[in-house]
Amino acid sequence: MKLDPQSYARMVRRAAPPSALGRDCAWAFAVGGCICLLGEAMRRAYALRFAPDLAGTLTSITLIGLAAAATVPGWYQKLAARAGAGTLVPSTGFANSVASAAIEFKAEGWVTGVGAHIFQIAGPVIAYGTLASWVWGLLYWAMSRGG
Image 1 (cartoon, one colour):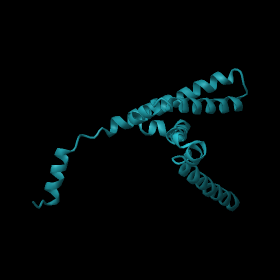
Image 2 (cartoon, one colour):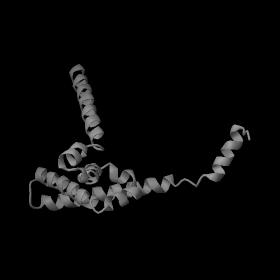
Image 3 (cartoon, one colour):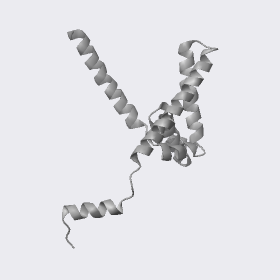
């Protein structure tokens, strides 16, 4: 059976499930916003007892610890499956990627398992993030010298 492109496109539209892109984007935005709101509430609570710089550091440490702790029983993965990038963009998503790899390869031992694979998912983020920071730093330096 040979179909022309228009007929094939009509068949695909009829067979494909409706896209929930708008709803998915709104949900990701809401979940990411809630994570950030939790972080801001923590920062303000820490700021009542500590210096502002230390309050920010403690907030990051707490959020990363909570994300890693939620990864162990699989709760973070369930949330990420529904919220998508809403859970991946904040530092909690980075913590989840590191903790997930550590949990997955723990059975292979601490050195050949966890040690060798802990940054398997997060490694490219670190590498390209470092590269991007160098590129932007050089651009900033070049622009500040020229102008």
